[in-house]
Image (tube, rainbow, N blue to C red; front, side):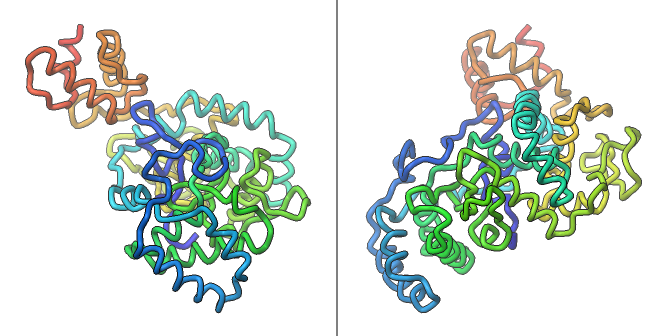
Amino acid sequence: MGMTRRYFGLGIAAISLTACNGTTTQGPSSPKSTGLPDDLKPAKNAGYDDWVASFKIRAQERGISSTTLSTGFRGTGYLPGVVKRDRNQTEFSRTLEDYLAIAASDERVSKGRAAFAQHQTTLKALEAQYGVDAEIITAIWGLESFYGERRGNVPVISSTSTLAFDGRRGAFFENQLMAALNILQSGDIPASRLTGSWAGAMGHTQFIPTSYQAFAVDFTGDGRRDIWSDDPTDALASTAAYLQRNGWTRGVRWGGEVGEGAPAGSIIQPQAGGPKFAVTSNFKVIKRYNNSDAYAIGVGHLADRIGGAGPLRASFPPDANGLTKDDRIALQQRLTAKGFDTDGADGVIGPNTTKAISAYQSSKGLPATGEPSQELLQSLG
């Protein structure tokens, strides 16, 4: 999809936000500005208005009609929150253990099995046509939008035009904006429903506009490639088409944990002391969706779990603070029991857990470092 997709989606791309230690504001697709925080609603910006005026000239020269421009930009505008989020992006330094704790959480597995059962006929039809395992398609759906629950409701014209005007990745986002306008002009979606993440990723499986143009398909046969609909069929088909066209080999597994019947292939160990994985050419194809070993393992492992497999058998070593996952879960549970809510207990130390630790430390007259430790765990009883 050109630039790595990890910056665009709502699901595992923002993994620290979808864990029990954070929140998301996104929900299913909805009319413009519905349920959005104030900083993701249009704000006055004269420079942006001038940029849009000049862009419209360029767009018309490239075949975008005045009607499409008028309709597409109606009610849109500069979104300060988009620039803020773009500026505040970091590469989350999660361990693979933390990543998989979220990517293949009990909730994501159970919801994935339910989604697979509900849409099994469609998924098996996609597997037959495109050769991509139905469980892999489902897993990508689960990581990208939590099976459609977090598709995003930020107007794509506003988000991409804001980022194009901002200029940090101006050329890239101007291309996304032009592609979004072409989507409107083609009639696949009305302007009021052209929504996505704050950075313009759209639908159940979070396609950016240029990827939509290149890979989206109309599997329902209704004449529109509707990846935004509550019916996920076109979005799932588009994901299968994407993987197929990027080299997916029918009948070959993504890989698996070494020693668990994994196919022969390259051996990788993303976390020192943790499980090893044998990966195949299809593992590399998954990375075309998001160029990250952790993401590809997350997709593959979640797919296996959806298909009925159990958790990984090999254990991960204690973290830098000397805590195992069980220790971290116990820490979260004990903090919550004492009134310092961590908003769940998944063993991943995120913002809510750090805040809870600091509050507990302050209550005891200790320096509020927010750092977990064996000493802290023992002090909680």
